[in-house]
Length: 103
Image 1 (cartoon, rainbow, N blue to C red):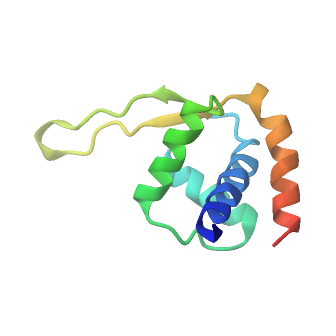
Image 2 (image 1 turned 60 degrees about the vertical axis):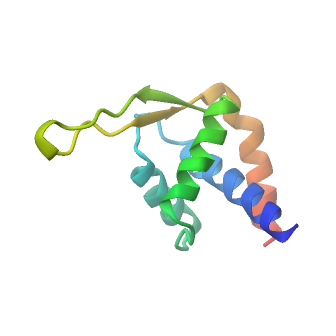
């Protein structure tokens, strides 16, 4: 049960941290924004954050702005960028503020 609560809390805090972003962002940008806003390191692996983003996309909080493409010849390609669906974030920011107060 604690694990599920941590996931919900992390998702809400992630939405809260990203809601102010108006420009497209990468997952690494999102992690940096989360850590800056929360004042603590995001203590989960990149795969967990990618799953969190899949959930946010499926819930229409975030959408894929530009799909990443593999690079040619082993070079780094265009990374996937996301944007917040600003119409969905207002109520979730209130929930995140409450979740932050419960810690």
